[in-house]
Image (cartoon, rainbow, N blue to C red; front, side, top):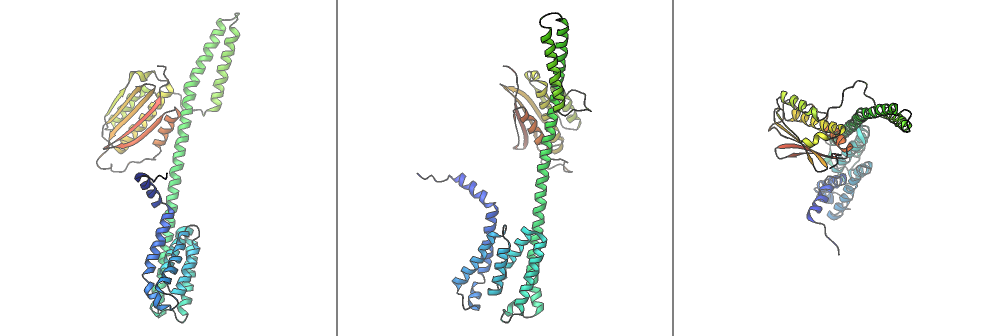
Length: 379
């Protein structure tokens, strides 16, 4: 049995189609056809070979070529020149010149405009061209030329705006990729600091045990264990980027109080709650918590200065929950905050690298960031 789409699904389909390039091309074709239909009575009287119906069909066929204006903008342009010479119709050429300027740029638009003016001038000199379209050269220049220049100029301006928007999208995507890459490097460095320290301790302990077990059967086992730990540490150094300028340990939960104090000194009170169970997290997970809370407090200070922030870190079964909330100001801060827009990507990369998820959204009059990641604790 054929199932009809539900109303929400149909609405989503209509919304997607309404913003698609194909839909805009159809709207352009219909608009041109509608404007040209205003000339149908005059066309039927001026050309005995056409009636109202046939003139309408001819104009509809010409306007239909505008659906090709993105891929083949020269097709509606040539059709528009033909309609101008045959039916003295100037509406179609405006859409065609705009499309060439919009989708082929300045050089193509200038060439098309000059060609249009040349063809129009040739038609102006042809006997029988309607007097109402220009009885003198000055009338011709004041009517025909501005139509083409204006349409092409608007198209070129739109083409430049498209380029600016495309470059802006590329810039944001590049910034997001850079933020993710930097966060991955940061995670790798944290692994180097934390895991490398443990491997060093393991190698030293194994060497001590090997010395104590000298002459016994387990001495060789301890020596092999120490060699394995040293090789693992060497491999870690070669695989992960070192931090030559950073010798301090990565901050963990103990650094959250300092972050809260910094925010309060900037005028934004912070209510910090850390569950006791969370203090048993591994240093790497604590570093992730610190990174998320730091970014959230920074964003709150930028976009909601002086407003209170609530930070809650709890353990829910096998998951650690990080929740940061802050109200939003009634008016945007002045001056506008300076932001690269990559902090969210960094937080998402940090949390996802631990197998967790992060959501940042507006809720009512406030903003909330919620991150869930596995605790890695045996329950």
